[in-house]
Structure formats: structure tokens, C-alpha cells
Image (cartoon, rainbow, N blue to C red):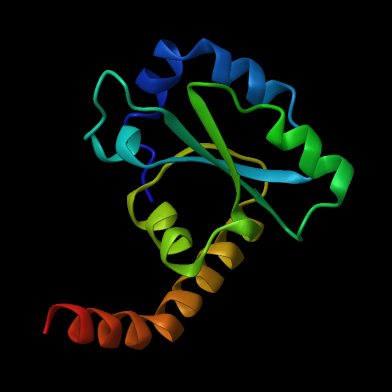
Length: 131
């Protein structure tokens, strides 16, 4: 995960700065991922944001976090993402905010372990599907 490009992205998207200011304490990190993070965004691309928490948030916090989404901002909870997407969040993502580096480090380790556990299944599926 990188921080390069963070300041420029936040200057262009002040609504995300306001969102980060209003986050509950349960959010330990905010990561930009998807096409905006990889530089492959088109004019119609949305902005994919991932909230990292130490534990799966309760229903009230989940509702609050998901309410930050809009037509142009897709919000995801790290705990709800499949292993392959969690891995890509850390591989390609841009760290926009970090309250707790230790929680972020643990989430990264869990994402890599989860991905390595499912990677053989993905490889077998690809081999069967595409020969």
C-alpha cells in the first residue's frame, strides 16, 4: 500500500476530507482502492473507499459508515470484503487516513494470509475454466 498521491487526491475530493473528519473512533484506517488508486479511472468511474476496523463493527456503526457512500463514492467495510479484494486493497490501495498503524498492520497480515489460503482454489478454477 502506498501514500503517494494521497494529498493530491484529497485536494481534488474535499468531500472525502470532511467524511474522514466525521468518522467514528472505530475506524482505524481509510484506504482508496480500485481504479482511482491504480490510475485506471475513467470519467464515469466511482471512488472505492475501504474502512478498516479492529473488529467487525456493530449494526449502528455499520449503518453510519455505509451512509458515507453516494452515487460516486462506493464504501466498503474491510471485514465484508472477500479475501482476493482485501489483498488488492493493500496491494494497490492508497492510504488516506490511519489512526492506528498496529490495527492496519494486523489487517494487512490477515489479508495476505487469507489470500494465500484461497489462491490455490482460484488457480484451480482458472485452470478448469480456461484450460
